[in-house]
Amino acid sequence: MQNLIFGLISGSILAIAAVGFSMIRQTEGFINIAHGQMLTVGAFVGFLLVSDAGMNVFVAGLVAMLVVGVLGVVLARVVFDPVAGKGALAQLFTSIGLAYVLYGLVRVIFGAKVQFFPNLFGRRFDFASFNITVGELVIIGLAGVSTAALHLFLTRTRTGTWIRATASNPELARLRGIPVERVSRAVWFVASALAGMAGVMLGVIGNVNSELGWTQILMVLAAAVLGGLGSIYGVLAAGLLLGLVMDLSALVIPSTWRLVVAFVALVAVLVFRPQGLFVRAGRKEAA
Amino acid sequence: MTGILLFFVGVLTLAGVYAIFAMILNLEAGWAGMWDLGLVGSVAVGSYTYSILTQTKFDDVTFAPELPIWMGMIGAALAAGIFALIIGLPSLRVRGEYFLITTLAFAEVVHQIAVNAKPLTRGTVGFSELARPFETVVGGTANRIVLLATVWVGVGLMYLLMRRLAHSPYGRLLRGFRDNDPVARSLGKATNRHRIQTYVLVGALYGLTAPMYLWYLRSATPSLFKADITFVTWTALVIGGIASKKGPVLGAVVLLVLTESVSLVQGSADLAVLLASSRFVVLGLLLILVMRFRPNGLVEERAAFAGASGRGGG
Image: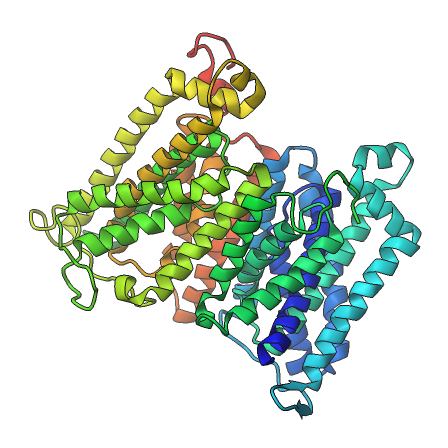
């Protein structure tokens, strides 16, 4: 039962991180390896605001989201726009380059130390077979709320509809007069802000360190493939599922193997269902 | 010998090792079109096989035959080749981005196995004080020059092999189905079988040459086999020019000299940490700038093959 709770928490965070990655993958058309480093930046910004500026953790999380969101838009403008249309290789390797620049900068500025948020978990509720803290409940709740908000944003607002249109067919969207550039900015902001939020959450439940981005991007990639690169909701579900599988596997085999479990699951899915778990055949809609 | 000279001997040795990796990656990704983000997995399998087969220092390993260096290299090539076959069969069923991600995932699995399979790999401690070739003949610091020469002889041999492959019917076939798989198949070429064969050949080559990296490092621990090796090799290749012939070597030398020279700046321990981190910034910036201003690299495929293959441009 306790593993189920842990799985739910890590799954929620992974889902939030992966959904942003998948939005960029769809509207911009490339795998953004630097997405993992946005989590690291979010975690460090949140940590600094709480530990040095003494800010409330929720305010700090919100500020970190905004900072990382704006950073995403700026980086998209400065780094990714010039290589747009130069082919998938150029975009992919630009994102790897950016990941290294961000990683190096984080280490230069914050050092390579592992840091911990002050204990924010609040009251602990003990039940017969498990316990859960207020902080953990908040994370699960926030993940649910942000998923719902994202859903409403994508289906109910004009920008959201534009995003889905661009994701499913960029040329057609452009022809129909959708302001593709504004869509691109919106996607970068939302996706990066979500990454920042996931980063703060990871920092709160675990620790803040400079390697966080590299570990997370592997799992984000796994979740994105599991869910099918073409489906935002599929990726959400896959992130949650992957978190659960990893933490539940700890019941059967030592927890040091949890990444191996995730990737073996990933490879199995690729072999038997290469289009992803949650993609209906023949349906190429984006969201 | 002065420190600065020794430093550049070291940098050039490492550049040679990466030049070899980049040439192999060029065969795999540049010509055969298989974008492998998990080459560190093959390098790690080769390195660990070699260490386990040849090491004589540790007796807490379940299997330690203490073989000579050359047999260790053959063993490493075989193990990495078999590993490539095992992961190639499922991975090569998928294309493009899915292949990238699968290979990345397998490399992480190898890393985790190296950490967790303690009886064979000694876990996070790994192997240290590994022997270098010709150490009994030329000892001390002079051996570093010998190592530099050995590695660059390897670079030369690999270059000759790759040039040979590039202009062979096999090399043309690879570039053919990279650009247009249906056409190659319609001409009766078994493209999938060629992909698997190439993937296994490439894996074995990584395994065969991985010990050179160990000679430079003198140790093998899981933390040495992270995605960094994959990305540095890829960076060297794209800087030099993917699918060209001299590009990988040129790219590796330029990249390694630029990133390693950062450590020439002398200073306090704090500064050293700072400089170690700024190496990643240099690596990343180089990649971004090359992609932006010269996305085909320093040597372009078109130039490398112009006229040589009999059909201009190629």
